[in-house]
Image (cartoon, rainbow, N blue to C red; front, side, top):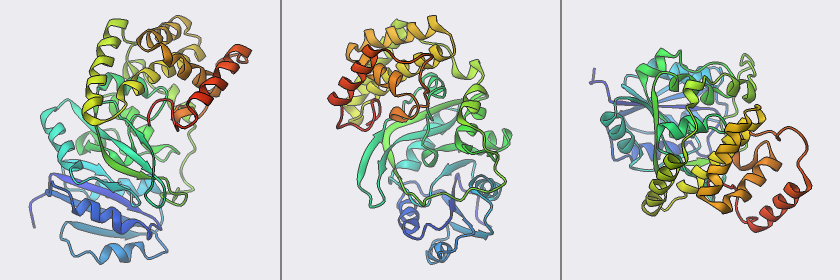
Length: 346
């Protein structure tokens, strides 16, 4: 039997015939080759598994089973995986050639980190660009982001198998990835590679193979479950300014908008605090974000008035109806930034 690989890439497939070939090919083109690709065909009825079987590559392990839902299929794949690191890959997405190498290098160099994602491009069904999610690399910013949005693209993640197994793997809940990050970050640190190393396809039929056994756990309930130690504390103004300067310098390297994402997150977490009647913390965060970038107040207005779903954030409207001034400000912000998909991460 060949030696165990360093990385096991786990891919669950359900009726992904249109894109699964491209997804598998993107893994086979990786510059890092010490991996296996564990493909769980979760009851596909469109011949997806037959397409995977046609690949003549010893690194691919195809397992076909009756439909069990994404979380159960991924847990099965993790059980079969022989690598010390588990990399996720969705059947309709694309990994850039250097993705695995960059993530393995980070995990090898930083034993305190158990989970690492990447920035990613969101594409439509034909592969056209929609927008970019800029992933913040530092653990403390990832933890803060947990309160208001998912800090990792699920398909981008590589995680130490030992840490994944220790927390019990995926649970049968509606948002299985978010739930997993919360539990892993309770015990370990997280990180992101800020470069765009993944393309995430928005596909209406994509990975929609939920099991009837899954318990619907609302997002708000997940957020309420976050231990304060996991989310961390609000940064001081000096620390926030130092971090913003770091991200602005990094932006020039990765051609990204990490700084913009960071400031928008401070506003969003500030609104989160206000909603939970932590007025002093909320106002301090908003004030710090505004001092860092005064024009970011437009982002605050949009998030405050827009509430749920604006810019990918999980925010309900703050207590009480928005004032006319805030409504007017939100309308002005929409006009000024109508060409943008997100206030934070394009």
